[in-house]
Length: 135
Image 1 (tube, rainbow, N blue to C red):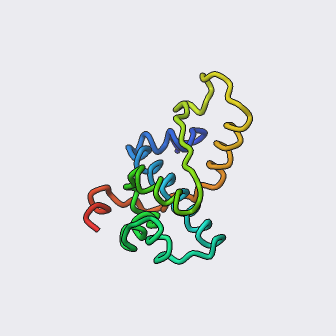
Image 2: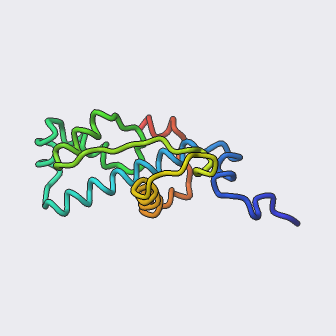
Image 3: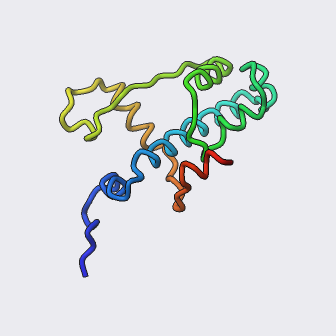
């Protein structure tokens, strides 16, 4: 009995299962939520205080910090970053992991590596997009 996934990349497996984009979105959201929560700890900020700084409700902040809710607007993210005295930095990376792309700067390569290393593992049980939206 052979395993068709033996030796394949995990991304290839997720692609075959049709959940690569959803899993990637959840992983990115988990990293963002974790980074915001960690900065709140460093600055000793409560959710209420950060929500006031962001000029939003605590419920909106709770959605931002919810690791399972992959929806996120750039406006909300920028608002949270500004309220924490931070900025947001985004870039598009090659889908093939950079194998065919022009060389990156060391700083960019380190940032990408750090983001990948800090990314929490997605949950084993997949929740459908519709189920997440209905909660």
